[in-house]
Length: 354
Image 1: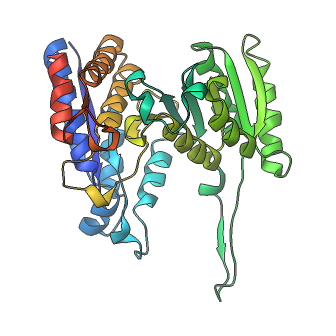
Image 2: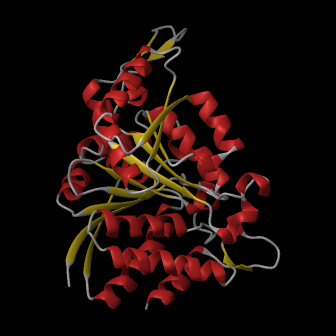
């Protein structure tokens, strides 16, 4: 028996629905394995702007820091496009506040959803199982921003230190040691000085992992190779902006962005777990969202932050069992399947655990 404190950032759009779905499944795990999960709701994103005027209230930071981990839905939406501070600023801020400098995004093609992938069958013969390790608190998203007073130009700084690249590279190599021992470092070293430093630093870290094969790709070629031959990749390590783009591409290959989880980690066990998709305000409140990415994110939380390996496996097995029974949310539905909503999908998965 174990007790864990989980901060819930439901956020905007479909965020509240998918987080509630994950909580339904977590409660089934708690009941079966005799754990106690203590949930605390906190505000971040557009809902926080509406309530407090800030996308990231200090209370949210304090509660997240006092928790064992954080489960996030999604933030943002067109409602706040013209706000002085956008909801996404809260997301960048919480990553910084919690020291979460790495983002792990697994893209796995489930056999049940092979037909949902845009790639032809021959390109998927060897499957898809890619882990994108994305640097999360540096690069252009956190660099200095400048704007001309007359609005005629703007600039954003891409900047990395050896320390920042070293720590994310170590996570990539450690991850590869648990997988197929292959790392592809993605950069733009033929053009960018920051990428030249990135490549030199990754090569230096690689010396400590002689069992791991390291190769390099320019980001444009990496995007093309993901579409042509995704099976060649095991672990991809890359910068904040490149990782943001490539992980979305790999998720599309997997069939649906609604299926893929992510984990944001730092130097401690406290992480933040979230689906990689956005807030989808066009379907919010309609019970059409796919909660599976959030549910699998919760499974990653159990394993990576709480050390509950069996419990995490139980969730993943439950997801597979429900897909094997042909239940589908609208985003992954095809003829002959059984269409269900967000709430029912979560309940079905929970029922496989109980």
